[in-house]
Length: 150
Image (cartoon, rainbow, N blue to C red; front, side, top):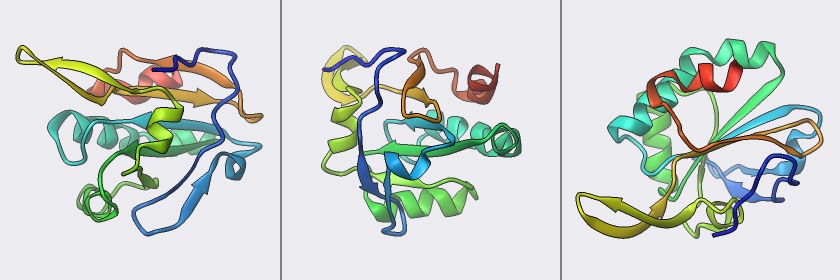
């Protein structure tokens, strides 16, 4: 697992969103970018996190931030998640885990005594020039926007 830290150049990613539109790092030059990785669409923690970002979306826009959600879910699952909760930002369907691996958020996890590989809930704040400004690995799903906007 590659560990990206503050000051690193963000990986040059390219992936499709819930509607098949391609997004890449270069699209966000001149804007701050929040890339939040979540384990699975429509699960309680992921829903709380996405909805908190949705509810504070205007504050992000006012501060020149774009937001991208990323999980290994299918395009169809991402579309359903986005529509059900009226999420105003794209959700990348990273089924081959290329973006997830590039950011180093895939690896061993423990749940109920079992170890398995999965996505570590992590958020990267990337500045206007593609440099990682902050990495949040202790995500508070219900108040995540305040962790970013502080």
